[in-house]
Image (cartoon, rainbow, N blue to C red; front, side, top):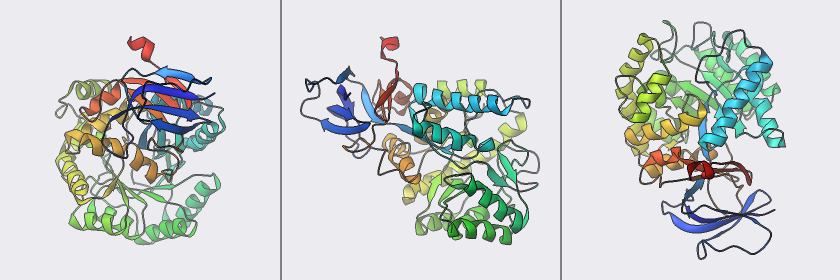
Length: 406
């Protein structure tokens, strides 16, 4: 049955101009956008939903997600229980946060692959997923003891690991080339962990098999190594230099800055949402200190990339997903992006990063109907994305919060 969304204010993510319109959805796709008669109905047997002036935007994306929970998972949690936990977080992200798409940056036991296929088959209501399985790291590297890590040392082990990921039907390969803010004492952002022969083996095989590489790189040496070897995307980039920006442009690579990691600390929290986030996500003092130490430089290179015209997509690297994407969007604007740049980064640019821009990411006739209605204009205040009224995924209403808001 067709779906008609009337009296919507459409922000299509193509032009930064909100327009009153009626959106007709048939067989999961946007059939028509009528800007001449926003309140009219077709008179057919359509399901009609009156959005009453709510702003209709494309579904949001988290382009760097681990589906982290609010509280740490107990080590004793079984694989079936962990799978249900991950599924619940992703489903909440969809229904409560309007996150209709995500790119995995690491998940244990190929749960992201299983969830991707469950969503695509209609057996589970969740976001569309670009999956990577485990992230690949080294002994003494970034988070080697985490449940989402696959430790491999030397070219032979790395090649075997990449091939194993491919065999498990991942969409991209995630490589942790350097340290991070959130890690043990040896795990520092300033260090590049992989040897030249290890880097060459991983990237050469990924190129040979046509798999994009998602490169965790947090210092200039790691960023340059990743980009010169053909990384599809550069994650974090806490510290860079001008040559890094030039290489991002020259290689036409994506940058996903994940501002949540360095900017959400007790000393930096200013807004109501940031203060609540810090309260809900307590960390050891040394990790807060590491984030504070990285924040100014991270913000500088975020702005430099934005001003240079680097391709950028929005990813949170935080959790739970229903809140993390909204928080990352607030930080983008706080750090110098416009609401329009931020909205595009979380919709059409993130979809393009995942190779799906021909299907989703904008509100255009022929696109799959992944849509979110929010109560206020996000181009006036990006935090209006938090007030989700309606979520449509694949043309089907996944959540309707309008009655609760009345």
